[in-house]
Length: 72
Image 1 (cartoon, one colour):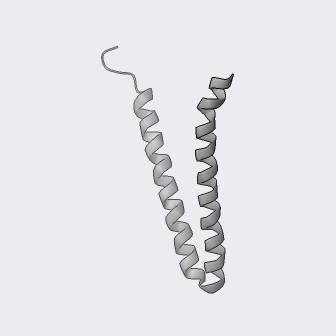
Image 2: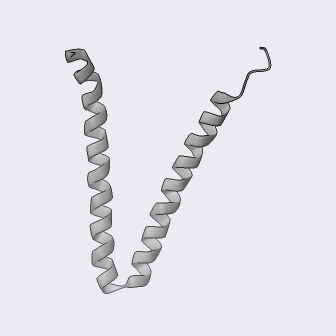
């Protein structure tokens, strides 16, 4: 059981760090929105675009893995 915790702990820490960064960006967007809504909207859209591109890359990898090989 201890080895399972050792394996999942780094992943959990990485996930928490990513959430902190996302929260920082969100709070920065709120601050910018109070100053300049257009800049905030652009930052949000850029971040969303980046996340969607990461998701699409993952989907493509999964699609490739799920394709039956021609050797079978």
